[in-house]
Length: 186
Image (cartoon, rainbow, N blue to C red; front, side, top):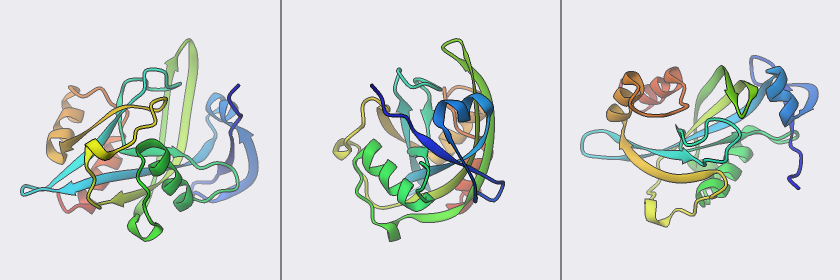
């Protein structure tokens, strides 16, 4: 049996309010909660490639969609950076050091979608991090219950695929553009 997860309810600044709720209730009620988004990139001769993960077919939301390199919830009692380090290790097998994560802002996102006959309300305040150390796809250790596969894609190609709808994804456009600005591409 899967262990229940609990999240701190957050305010618009990402600070905890003192209220803690179980994961399914947070997504049922649309409560603002903390997440981490880690963008793994590599420099190329023409700009940057972005590592995308394809979510597992068994995920409770957005199955088989391309997503941020690594992302996850901030569990109750934890902070953003330690959660980001945990997610990188769990999902991709990357043992990053705290100083290797470059924080570049907060993003508030909200989406409502139906999955498996239930309305899923995701209202998250996300700390965004950049990880630009050398990563080789073949050396990654994927958490198969979370991540089906990964691929590097040129930032501008990915941006166009998001815009024209040819990439099945669950990436917030404004966050992807913030990444492009951070990388000096926009």
